Image 1: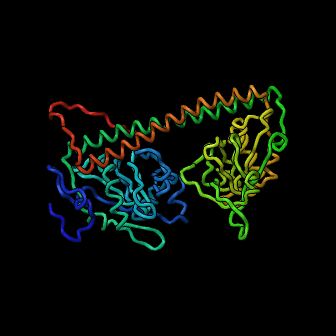
Image 2: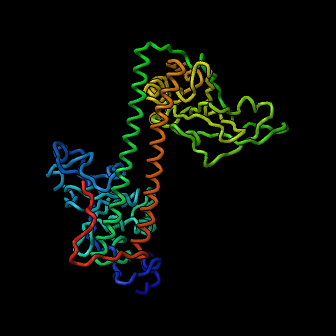
Image 3: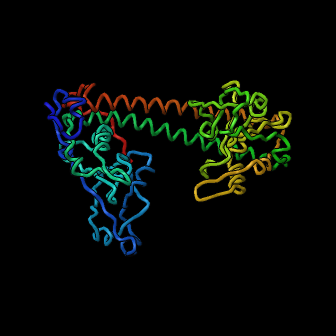
Length: 429
């Protein structure tokens, strides 16, 4: 098929029409249905409702291909009061405003608000194939989006986008392959969550043992030196300076350091020792999102020399009393988070702590051998988590490659003989 100049969308212009595939408009693949919101002040539309009513937030919070429930529900009266449609099982819920392209397949009958363009497939389109194919179409939909406050793509524009559709058996084979990768991704994600839960449980057990053994508790500043970092933007005109790398808040994450982007700062040579990091320093952020308050990690000398800015605290433990990795684990535990949330200065979504508050952190001090035992045990779980995370990222990379190859027809599937009836079973909720 020759694409006409100015044709809507560029899928065909970019990938062409593979042999045996048919040029189509998106509107040929499925019915595209919008949603609506009943009057929120009329309680009979909502109270006691049993019909799931999806908003884009329900989709963005959903971690699986399928969605079976939502935060809010409508009554039959509420559904009939507006232009919302009760969508059948298998409908692809696709967000079409603000966030364009978040999606999930309805595992039960449900409806949506007006932030959706939901796809009800017809007999020539496989629903799970279309679920994946929409990822290829989303960049086109996004370019067609309009709006001043947020992007929104109309159902009319979506229907007019050109694409190419493989025969139904090939669609089903493509969907089975991608679904199998999704199953592996979901199992790996579950394994990571299980390992993280195990780590939290082991840390709590360790704290419980310390409590039963009546381990001493000391203020942090009694067993460590707490230091602030270099202030940025100071006028150093006329002063001799040296330019060195430094860590920003963005570099210090919860339990690890992100060193992909390191910036530099000019500093007087006489101040280098004051702000230079040493191996074993525990780094903590001054503030930010409430759930990230007190996040930190142990510095292992990855960059030498390296400084830290004033929104990052550096805690240098007295190694005769305190293992820095034990301290970092203690601070990152529920015990530590509860302390920081209790003392922090808080606004609506943000929180912060100062040096005085951090210095008062009550450090549980079992014997060094016990601290090292806890650290070694949790390090084993951390290695397991990192292994699973690496596998997760590899699977995601594999999926992206397969989608690009299979959904564009760059790689074709050799279909089994019609009589074989064999195939990979699809996952369902």
